[in-house]
Image (cartoon, rainbow, N blue to C red):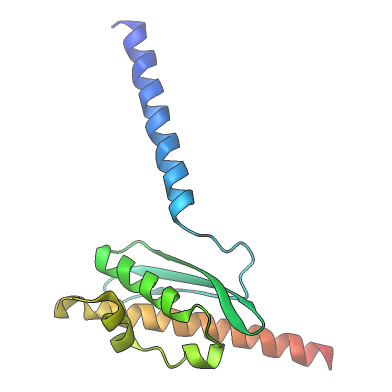
Length: 140
């Protein structure tokens, strides 16, 4: 075996890995110190995670993540998009039907993806509200 072929193969593998890493972190927003966040596992086995950052009691930044299918990906992104600019109380009004409408055409057999996204969003808000109550009660 020619050693140059091995070096070339390893070099190409490193370049592909580096490009994937850069694109992954470039196109996936990250909230380093979220004010609220949740990770929920659905009955289908998909995992969704939402992390939210608040300023003046409104969502200013959010980062969605899922290990599921394209429908799960679209639903969790739609949930975060719907939450931007809203207060925690307004976000609690976001439901699976709103997420389905935001996504557009979602096959009926994937409606559970919208339900999981809504559940994850509400869990992130619950986490935010619990943290806020804890901070408030500690200062009294």
